[in-house]
Image 1 (cartoon, rainbow, N blue to C red):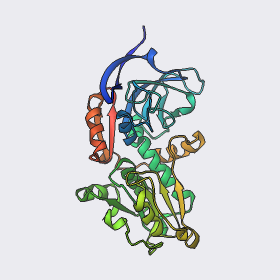
Image 2: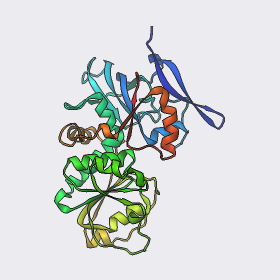
Image 3: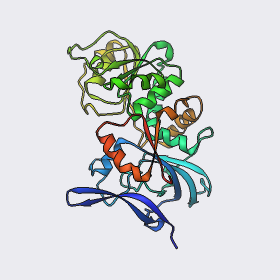
Image 4: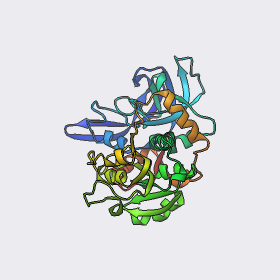
Length: 331
């Protein structure tokens, strides 16, 4: 008899999308090489978009969101993995069109699966999740492009969100001095506890002068919001500095002259954590499990159970969540 499990299922009824916790069977899962019992997942903005029927994320319903999952291999058709292995999955199609980590079991292709790095627990891997992995990729890009702690302060935008808060914690652990941008003045102490040396307002990070370049004050920047705040970071970055971009909450568009690139040699690096090849994933997860693993992981984390996910989806859509929301599938 096939094993039963609980999952959040999003169903479309007319123009409405209904969230329910339902009992499912392992036999209902999509075809794949590796069956995983999910212990932890995490809530990301993309999961919330899937839950409200955003066509850029999910088109086919009923569907189980959850772009992150960590758990134990139950069986595998691929010899790379065996029963009992601790593993994690982020990115690719998980939680988009393939049923994801908001269910107690997933079945996925072997090439999506990462063996849990030594030094990291299943719980910690999902405190990181896609947000932490994206932040880790951003830090990796700074280092690869020779933006070091000696180059001066690094700006982090959208700093109370999942990627922004993780970026502050990771960069601080890696020895950088961080300046956090936020519109939430009441979160200043939280951001300093994560490692920011100071906090500035959105207005300070959103230049409206129209000037093509500003004084170079940042050694580099990790941008999570896009729009004019990204443009401001680019034209405020010092010679040969690196700016990474991975988000769009302010806007999908920004306007910049070529001057920061051709006069200061500023580098703009796009961060993709979805289709990234495995040989690029593994070094970043190894860093996160070891020298970049922040002491402040628990400070970042609010743990919930599956029954609480729907309410937290509403909160993240309203911009009312801070840090990381960890989902314990068996709580």
